[in-house]
Length: 112
Length: 113
Image (cartoon, rainbow over all chains, first blue to last red; front, side, top):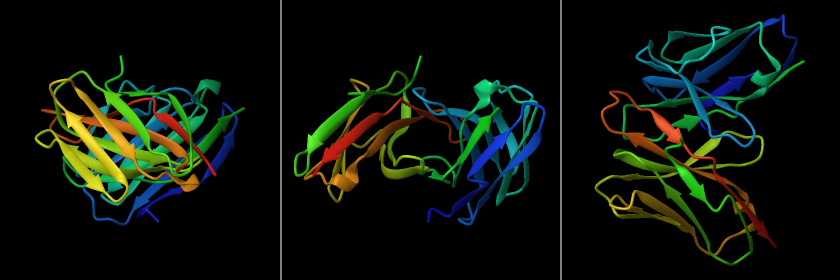
């Protein structure tokens, strides 16, 4: 139990569907992150929220839309995805810099 | 190009042996972190070493940092089958204003009984 919970654990969707990934942290951290992990590639940072404000958007296509309604919750809204978007999406949280990040177990996303 | 690159990409050892993984990076850093990932799971933080530190220990783990060579190593002593996982280094660079980690591609460790 890492204190970061992601749902769903697995998601299969067609390219025309709209779905959302959810992340919740119970650690009282002030920053939350979305990462994409594809086979044989380094973990890619997608979005960073610090104190509920987006501070980083790493050239992510607009078909991915993040939302951070409060410091404990983070969403990733998905629409019109492509097959290359199939990956493990990981959420993490941390408190300030120079501290470790705590990860959820991810959502395995498959695009048909 | 990647900030952190691990070496080797894969490592296969017997239980009881030591495992050493290396990480190289390119820019000035605040800290370097090592994470572990079991198949199909999230990353678990192992050790954080700050730029002014040279060595850190945690149980069977020993991490060194050489900022002059921009490299770090992770040593796992007396390995166990349960240590089988992928290990990643990640660097936090200076001056970003918030925590931004850059990960390498990882080392896959297989420990056989």
